[in-house]
Length: 161
Image (cartoon, rainbow, N blue to C red; front, side, top):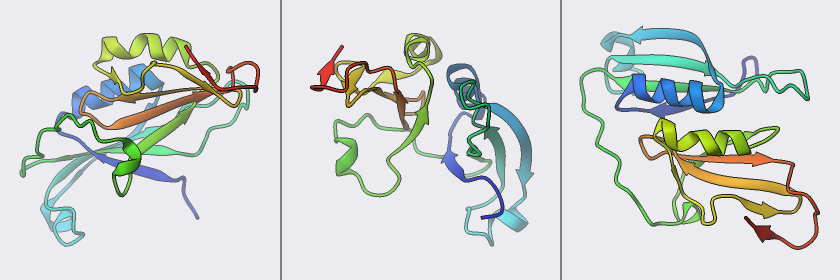
């Protein structure tokens, strides 16, 4: 590998989704590019695109960046179908199912997510398991996001809050 790992997320509303990942998770925009049909078409991307690269934030405890980035990809001409709510468990799906963010403390993020258009996918919203707290959310367009921290307390029996 010569560059940080990047996960691409195709979006309908680039402004909304960029705001979500910036405000809710602290991701920082590092690059924005218009990809013309002459590149997007032959590359198999379907046509002209607008792409925003977001850097996953630096953790205060580690003092280093994760190296990961999220690419938000908005097709410019072809419509992206609207997300449909699904009761299908994440593990029943095939392919990329969710993005995981390891945080020092998920509590402030969990508290802020509804205000930026996210909805909880787990019930209860925060689950304690093996010394960690875990919470699954749908971003404003329905993509699944997992939040994990090490503040689950006693690594004994799993419990929920």
